[in-house]
Image: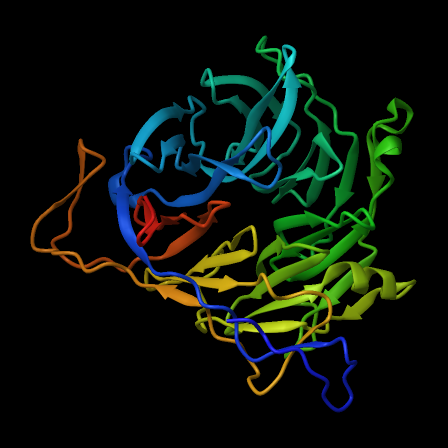
Amino acid sequence: MKQKRRSTAGASPLTQVLDRLPDVPSYEPKDFLCCHGDLGQKTKVWACAFEPSIDAPGETHNILATCGGDTVCFIDVTTGITMKRYKDTERGESFYTMAWTSLEGDGKKVNILAVAGEGSSVKLIYPDQLVLYSVIQGHKKYISCLAFHPASPRLLLSGSRDGHIKLWDIGTPDLKGSSNHMPLLRIKVPQHVGDPLSMVISNETGMLVAATECGCVGWRLPEVTKLCDAASHNKVIERPSVSFALPLSGSSMETIDSLVALDHGLVATKRVDSGEIVVWDLDKHIRSAGSKHEVQVKALVRLKFPDTSVKYLNMGYCAGMLGVGDDAGKIHLYDLSTVNSSSAPTHLTWLPPSRVVDWPDVDYKDKMEVDGDDTIDSATEPVVVVNTVAISSDHKYIAGGTDNNLVCVWQQEGAS
């Protein structure tokens, strides 16, 4: 449904007033796989992401990367087959986060997956050959989030429990193996802010923004050319430039457990126990911040989401579609293709999801066979928490990782 464009009192004639989000086609369960670790339902799948297309920026392939426990899986969502599985040998490793990038290597462009977690080091994997070709060591505690710099695919940011975000040049993959990395930049995360949970970098301003256990904060970074200057390596940024206070609470001291970059300088943030997702113009807020240390966020759109105290439910976004799971096994989908910097909600305070994909009905009287050779004891219906969501660029597939060691793939009905 196309949204009406009209003028209202106190609004610019160019303001796009949203009564509702566009509808989204229905999805049907395709494959539910148990393919991480040796702990059965105790393993939590924390992150999943579709492999990016090398030749077409913004598009994705049919390979889904997932991580949970000591295992990273590469799943072909068209067949439901786990094509490759990397199992880490480091004792106590449990992967929490991942990020894809595309680099030049051996005269051609290749995709590289960075993963990290409890082991406090970043592992760089070349999926085509299933080679762990480099390990980046430099944090003292677990790593909770990773993000590549949008202006340079070699620059990787890692956020850790140790109170630091570090910027690394991962170089180009030579498959010879390396752990000799020095951070280009160290960013101190104040103790009162808490652990960084997710990060984005503004394309327009270059500011790094992190969602944390106690708020949402930003640091002004040097230009990429200066970051890569050897003379400035290991530079330290001592404190955040600005804190962003979300609506309702009026405070910047709150758990923002998910932050994702949308299109055109917009971001979405989800605050624990708030019952909403806030979409706002990050670039505009950065420009208006000036010398202020705290900025009140003005929402473009507020999206309805279940009021849950469960933390670390990570949103996924691709090609205009936002998705996030909940603590009832559901995935909430929001078509944001009509949302832009001039959007403004009317009548409804919160816009409901375009579609909610329900947890499928399962016969829990028997054991459920998963991934061909593994089973989940389903004598009693489990409480399913969907920790992470990924969406393919054509919206044909959505995927989620759960608290009970499942990778769940849904396919758009009617798609072949």
